[in-house]
Image (cartoon, rainbow, N blue to C red; front, side, top):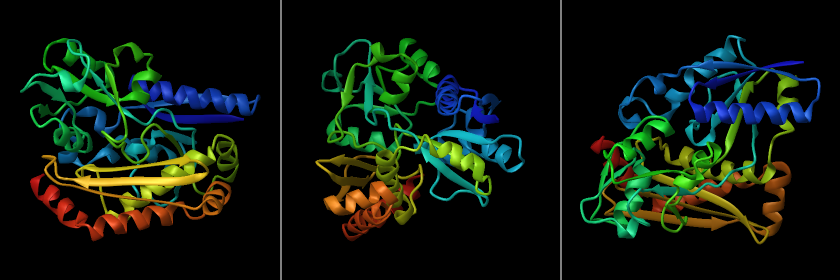
Amino acid sequence: MRVRIATRKSPLALRQAHEVGGALQRARGDLRVEMREMLSQGDKTDAPLARIGGKGLFLKELEQALLRGEADVAVHSMKDVPAELPDGLVIAAVCARADARDALVCNDFGAAAELPRGARVGTCSLRRRCQLRARYPHLRFDDLRGNLGTRLGKLDGGEFDAIVLAVAGLRRLNCDARITEIFAPEMCLPAAGQGALALECRADDNAMRELLGALDHAETAACVAAERAVSARLGADCTSPLAAYAVLHDGQLRLRALVGGADGARIVRGESHLTRAQSEAALAHGNGAEQLGREVADELLARGAAEVLADGARAH
């Protein structure tokens, strides 16, 4: 059996695609994996994503290849996948999550708290900027785009005093040694789906859906479903400083979420959890996780999230 994997050409995307290809071959020994490397619209510009159409720009070419029958599966970072998929496509599996946290990378200081007033911190994530600016109002946050190597190069070249990146990406590219500080979720709540990989295929390709299902991780899938339900309920995108992070703790699925202004002056938070019985159902059958996300989103809305999101949209 041949499986054609659509992937972006960035080093991180290729690493993720090869990890998935290897896992599929281990699941089925007679599998022949081929890579379809593509340059996405998001890879062709350094403009802030919030201004040019959002993270969905990283998916379009891959999804078109699926719909044209030129590829069988596309590997995405789940945090880049919009709430609504194109007609005819489905997320067939969510792989086991890597570390979902964010990290500070800095050459001259040991932690964000040590950075001097006015230090330049690079990140294009409004979510990260919102939370970190609230905690460190003396720092300057500037846009930073490009693949991981480009971002690290800008730090090393002196354009920034520190940058903020996903722990998962750094570790997948064996850059653990560059991590200066890992932010606890209480300090910087992760994005919905951060650290997880999504495997997308055609909805009518039953053989591929069955094959990919072998890589589906029930706990990660339930957590991500709850997180993405928050985004969907709020109608949020990458122009919104939105965080949503679910974990299975002591047998219960627990979800925290927030939205905030880009300046960090106002942050609205919400959280809830499923009972043990409800959590077991969410893991076994997928029931309840999305409802949990909707409940937390409604809590955010009751606390003024819509106004915060509207203010953020006007600012961009």
